[in-house]
Image 1 (spheres, rainbow, N blue to C red):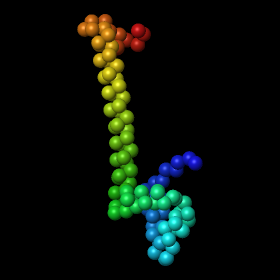
Image 2 (image 1 turned 180 degrees about the horizontal axis):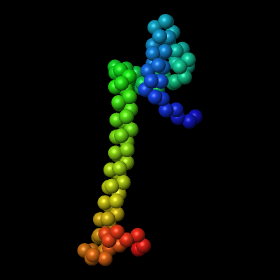
Image 3 (image 1 turned 45 degrees about the horizontal axis):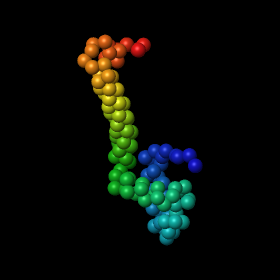
Length: 106
């Protein structure tokens, strides 16, 4: 089953629908199929979004996305550094290393 990405608004609406169903006397197991999520997802959403408002949830999603982007950037930079250090070790302190000179055809 493909993974669905829910916006903070959708998450809050589904949590609210589930809470109304549960408050009316239904069990959690009966309320969740109506909103279309599993019990694992429901409890994770309650943990992550339970005590915050919609604006905070939007900001949280934005920060999580930015954090993932920054982690990828750090990983690429670390890989580039390893490549440069390896080529420097192979060529020694010679100044004709193609990677250090910025040449693409080596």
